[in-house]
Length: 488
Image (cartoon, rainbow, N blue to C red; front, side, top):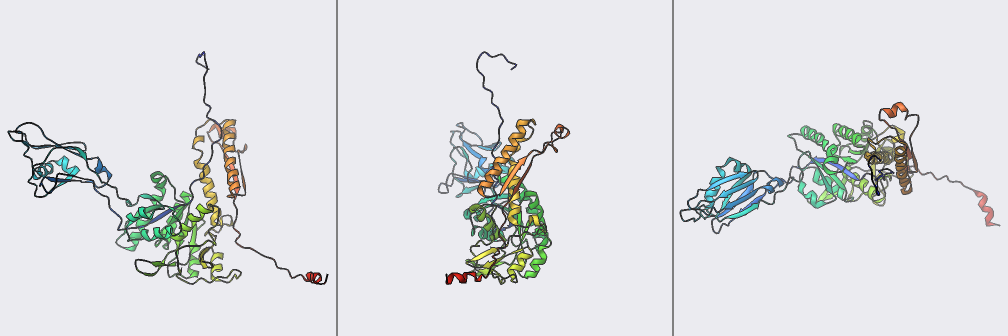
């Protein structure tokens, strides 16, 4: 100790392992259009009334919550023969009323409106309308703030979190692709959806370009909303190769998976061909589904990706991110847009051929069920969607939990704390059934003196995910030896 102390001192030692929290996996990233989305609301303030003809309505020039910071003050100067004046200090508008030689207020609503409109600073803040004919003398009013200003609920190209609430999604209106996609998702579960609204273009090509531009919002979501989307969809656009390619690129950056639809009229062989264009972060879906539209009072065709994303979120919540969504029921559909033949033990069905060629589909058996485990990857290591997602969630959880470890001194205690913290987490995952086992270690061959001197330290960890029982084989044996028991 460098300081003399005759007494007792407590020194806090900030060492030891840190718990690792698994990142939220059931977050859906949704991009689409909603031209009827609600606009921002301007803040307002009403003084006086139409009955007395002294009413004034002040409306913020800029819509949104900024207008709630604007205040209006109407002052009686309590002096004789004053002129009507309007002053502005920041967001504060101050009106000093005119009086006659007897100190009686003579300023009318119409006169105040004219005076405010003649002040450039005031006009930049508020617009003014009179109630009645504006001939009534205006009474003084203390400083009062405008109220009711609301921001646009779904601004263009900005990520907005919708936490399982259809009411929150009402701001999208009814037009475009987003409202129907939200309904598809919420038919499965009350998922957390990161919505990014794209502008509708003058033609399909421009709209698709806008949808691709809006995907940047997924990358900004962690900063803007606190959540990273893990399941990426763009219903009614993902059948376009350029859109799915961009979704795949964003999925790689976000450690996410993307579900891509084929065109409504695509055959199952078209779907098989299309799956060959993409990699391990894309799961191809075929065909579209039939749903009953209550507004049109008839069945319509819908791309299945939004319902598949909702299903994935539901399975994450109910069972865990390490479970397959295959053989799980999809809610809210009445059929598929094209027939999908399937039999449990027949390899020569459409459903089996699709799965064999890395395309997921829907079968009808005790309800409509998602059928398929495979991404478009040609690498056997990353064949199964749940394997890809398990690795992503574990890797991201470990990475995000170690901000505390950056810039600390590399000591034996430091290394032990990091290793043991990760091992604790892997043991927790094993107990949950998320992995079959795993271990973290610091490799001395990598952590050489030269490496450590550069401020670089390596930690390795491994794990083994559970794999889905995609192919169950029962070996049947005919054994006549049991006849002997009849006569024993």
